Image 1 (cartoon, rainbow, N blue to C red):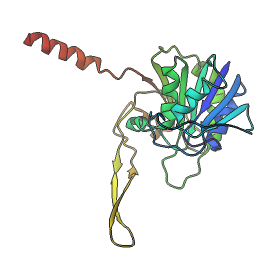
Image 2: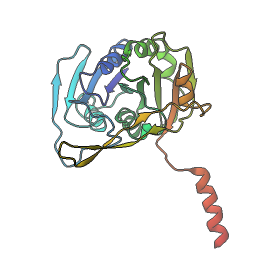
Image 3: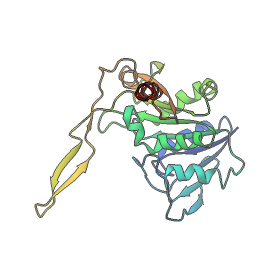
Image 4: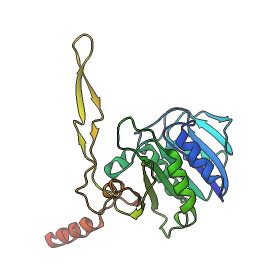
Length: 254
């Protein structure tokens, strides 16, 4: 099995090494990742600047640093080390959760999305650490992935589907896993107003993340209950239910 591993936290992020190390137990691994942190870049792509690719020393397999974004890294990976394609794209392990609507901002999720766009089975992994200052226990995600590799990488999904996995950052490890839909992100004080030394206002975007346990059956509830959340996501953003209703409405007017 040929495996391409990427992330949005940068080529030397510990979560990336965790993911690559486990993947190397099951196939040939090539790491292609940003040369620095690129969090919250979403599914952006570099179009008007050249991409510089540098092969770097790495503990696992071959590795390349790219002065671009996770989407760029997947496409570089499918051009430089894997011009004939690969069998699996893994993205992560992200330094923090990618739950609910946050998946739309996530460079980690975007890496898996780009793999799916290229027709490759793809999985995004994130550590759902929700307490400020808490150490990220990447080894928990590594151990869980190793144990569940065989079925997780062979799930019966369509060509338009990729998988988003969040692992609770609990020292005792997850109590199990749940297949769940995404919930809705909740933040407090999304944009904070501050002042510079001269009294001029500026704005810092981020906010305090709130885990809403009133969303039963979602990735939020799974993580809150100590379970790994596994969410299949689709490249087709069409709301087919609304599309059908709109078609009925238009037909009735004409």
